Length: 413
Image 1 (cartoon, one colour):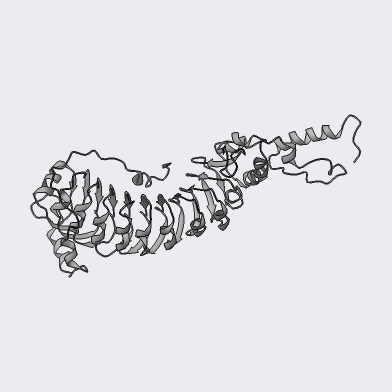
Image 2 (cartoon, rainbow, N blue to C red; image 1 turned 135 degrees about the horizontal axis):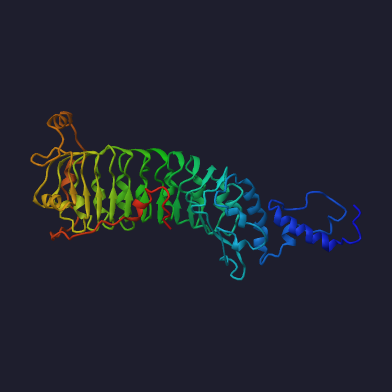
């Protein structure tokens, strides 16, 4: 190639630089020429503040080229060497080199981006600590390579179009403490290993997970556990009592859980929210529930529960909402009646004689015509704690964190 006299190699470099800014997908000069040895790769032309940013530049640009929809024009800012000012990208010093600058976190929440996969993107950002992507249209499966992200501790893929089996690669991320994959299309079983991961938050709700809950459920150290709106079957594992020191909020509502409420739930002394509504649970409420001293929201509605509502449960001082509607309870005592009057206890559509808005006699007779029983019936009358009968306090209903997870577009962190 013969250049006009007014052009020089430095001029061509400058033109190449501006051409790359216009054509963001350009990573190297594609057409070889006699000057190819003297014209450096694009990351060398651009003036990056750190070599770590130069290394991830082509990864980001390659991902940008896979995005098929960007209604908010987010990727228009993904141009040039100042990656730390790209919308959604945040820089910091990596733990292994406090003098370096790298991409430490990505926040795509609400960007409405569409891409067929995240493979080759987040799994290639070695210093990534946080990735939040609520409310986009990312799809595909999660690459096993994500396990190589040694600093990643928050992963939010909620409200996207991911599918396939549970992304077992997250089990091998050593630093992960927050996992949110709600509102996707994951299916199959949940591996028992996830309940041995050192997580604080585990949101798996609104997917298509099925089969039984793993027996080691209680091994989890999580504080917030949300498994709602799936297709889990079988009983609530008795091992749940082992999580008594950490669990604060538990959402198991709207599944296909069966069996009787285990006595062991009463050991969850730190729980403020326990919701197993809309399942197929049966039997009486164990008196051990009277030990849930911190519980504010207790939802057992829309099951097949029966018997008397235990007075020790109605005596819980922190209750703001006790939902027992659409079951087959037959009796309430004076403390429970006071909660009904205060609007704390909901016993609509049961079989309690003398209360309004109950099931018909025909419905109740049909239910009780089928023999029902629970294993270890003696355990239902055991109270494994010291009960202090105190006057219930007026409590304001709070919208607790796990209930926020039921909202598709809600960003939780």
